[in-house]
Image 1 (spheres, rainbow, N blue to C red):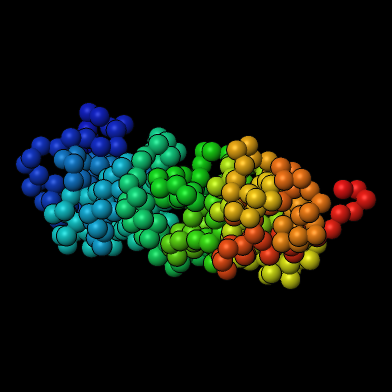
Image 2 (cartoon, helix red, strand yellow):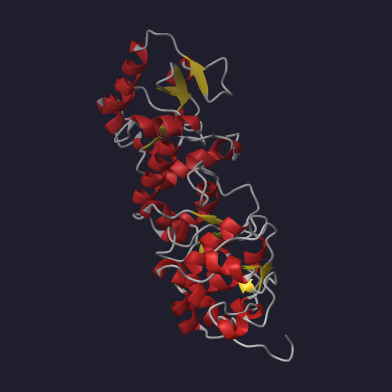
Length: 362
């Protein structure tokens, strides 16, 4: 009898509009609880009042959210993704504590159910991937996800990795706007641990792969422990993702990256001494005249050469073998050092094979 009287003209819709006079729905719930009705008999009936003046079916693939323990910012984010919340009066009433109704209303800290509800939206994955979040919203959602994913069995999480990838909560290194990892088909990487802020500019071609920011511990947890994005070893990063691409950069970028590279060169050479030969045969040093090297000036037209193709401008015996306008010496900041800082560049060129005498091939 109750079910028949509640039958809606729009029975196929998950929600129907409700008039302002809502006392009857609360009286109905009191009756259902008093009689201890089996709610599965009403799963297709519009019974749950929402915060947007509608009644929602009791059981829908995209379940309704409770307002319990959720900030205004987080609730707004859920709503952007298509989430619907229970009317506040209903949520704080004793009916919402009835054990028979708790399975129909999701608490925001039940993160698996939250992700499942996002996925159940009829517009999925567009409801996630096409929703723009502000930076603070991305941070809020990432923190919420991380805090509650840590409490969930990893086996359960595996079924929702795709949903997480569609959330715009991630940041590419050197970019400020939140992004999602899907649907873009990209190779994603993480910079070596503890080098995120000291490795200089990323020069690896973006069409071959991109790097994600892990400055937030919560984002780092999601990317490494949940999604399993590869974090590169320091040696691998510099050898395969930096050095081969040095020569194709603007000089200012090269200088910035080489500055960082030279800071950790002793460590890298301890790992593999052969890297010295690789760098020595890589064209990244601007070449100029002796005067340019002496004054750390750059030529009008920059030409990059290998360290092994340069001659030591501090060796006057070698300097005297060349004409004044011959460009065979390191130029710019790679030239004759003026102080301890600039000596880092010059001394490493010597380490990488800068010549102090002429061979039969010269």
